Length: 252
Length: 252
DNA sequence: AGTGCTTATCGTCAGGAAGACGACTATGAT
DNA sequence: ATCATAGTCGTCTTCCTGACGATAAGCACT
Image 1: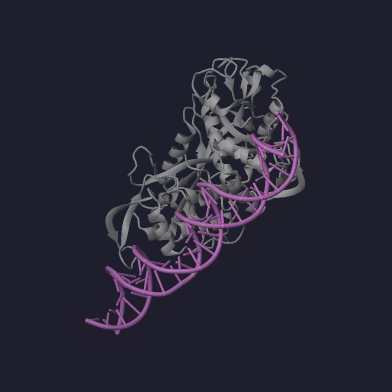
Image 2: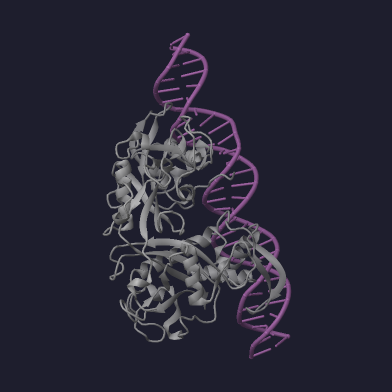
């Protein structure tokens, strides 16, 4: 097929973000309220158009910074504060996914430590952290009595895919540390796993597993009692990114 | 940000295919020769523009059928012959990846049993199965003395990502059966793992593992001696898609 | 028919990882 | 002082895996 500029249809390309964090022992995602049609007033994932001279990862990092103030954790400069993990998730291109025009959205997954409060153009009522089950369930009412509608566009599917990616990826990688502050305890890391998987883990076996995996955790020497009880050692994330053998998610 | 049709730049969207198969004990990918600039005469991954009314998966399945004659294995109609596995791989959108214009390519990964011969518009010299190491190595000469140049565009990166996806995914899923014909023996399945991972596996432990994993293999009752030696039982792929515990890839 | 070669299949054994769970330690709250 | 809370170390049993011996059942020779 020869090259013919008129032979292909034009598309709009956007990035949408699944931004996950752990708050109050549950896995939460960032949602923003849509200010204009279609789906005006409904909750949606943050996102926006990819600019003409921008790579997809750059666009996702820019949107993430605009919505949350988070910087992407640069693998080259590890021990950086407030750094989030960002990776491409999948691309959604159903011809009817946006009623206005043909839009292909490259979804990205971001994992971040617990943050003070979201901001979306300075208006706090238009952005919030919501438990993922709340965003994914049809109907019902939110914590503040607000009626829940499904997320706009195909964002429920995107969110579900992002959550599933995160749930499976913390099994065999050290990604769970992306939900933790730079220094954290074994118990805090365990509570991340418990929140993401919605399970209870045995503290003793978990401690043995994570401290016994070479390169996963590096002790910093400090201790903390911020969780109450006996002081716990503080750790940083080690250099290992792949866990072998993996963490096992309890069935059911 | 209000909706403004002129506010976003137009993109071309394509699908590129990493089609993998196992031939003569090595992992091979489908490559096509480019007939026009840029990269004229160089090898590339098959692919093409997404049409205006087409889903991304549809476009990938159409391209796959055009290049190989393969039908995508429909999960709804399992025991189908000549069915290939097709899944989305990742999306590549560097602004400079295509010198002509801004192109975003949604790469897909296809796994197929060994096929007779590739066809690309009927011209056999413009399509071939090549071992992935041959396509990924820089310089050197191919099997027929033809000088090897790197794949066109960023296709070497896409191929490398696809191969890595396949290598890791057969660890924890039953995907390796997609490289096998509808009925196959344990030894044939083992040779798939050995080719994809480039390792040697113990036949006895492999046999114990795969026959002991519930839902992985279903005996059909038949036997075959097509590999020589003692007749082997024939199996079909069982319903299980996730292997728990996974197959372990030997380190190094 | 017998020998050798090939592949398939079953069995045994030792080492390691993980789940269940007891015991002890070190803090803050009452 | 006592209790509640979390963290940390051990033990025991069970399961899985890797290493490898042994047998089975075809084919190609002689």
